[in-house]
Every structure is written in structure tokens, then in C-alpha cells.
Length: 115
Image (cartoon, rainbow, N blue to C red; front, side, top):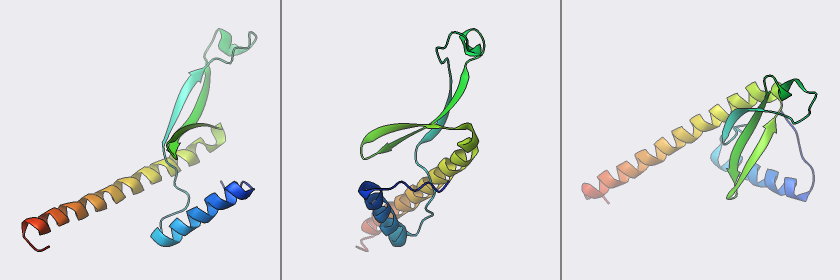
């Protein structure tokens, strides 16, 4: 999924992203947030969902810049997005664990009067 938006804002975002990638060296295709499914009725009176089973709709929900985003995910991209979200979550968990270990080591060093 290599969709490249255009324009100055997209260029600034890509520039910042690649700056972080060079600095921290983590994979560039992880996704934040969570992937969820809902069953929705479209509201068309002649659609099968009016009386039968509702439509299955997938969405990616994530926070960026303090703002919540919800993005519809087409069926053909669901598995790829799911894998990228899971990889992002695993990376974040590992990073949190490393930072927690560093904090614990700092506490131990202070208790041992090493620093």
C-alpha cells in the first residue's frame, strides 16, 4: 500500500517521517490505532440490509496531533492493515518495555548511589 499524497503538507509530513526513520531506524509501514468492524445499515429501502443482515464495515481509528481520526478500510485492505496495526502495537510495546527497563535501571543506580 504505497499511496503517495501530494502537496506541501504531504511533503512536510514525509520529510518529518523520514527524518525520524533515519534517526530511530524503525520500519516505515507500521500503523497506529485499532482496526474494528461494525455492522451498519445503509438506509436504502431496497437494500438487503433493510430487513436482513447489515453491511460489514471496517475502520481504522487512531490519534494524531491530539485529534481522533476514523478511516474506512476497504475489504481488500483489511488483512494488510491488520498486520501493520499489530506490528505497530508490538513495536510500541517493545519500545515501552525498553524505556521502562531504562527507568528501572536509573532507579537502581540511584538506590546504589552510582549516580
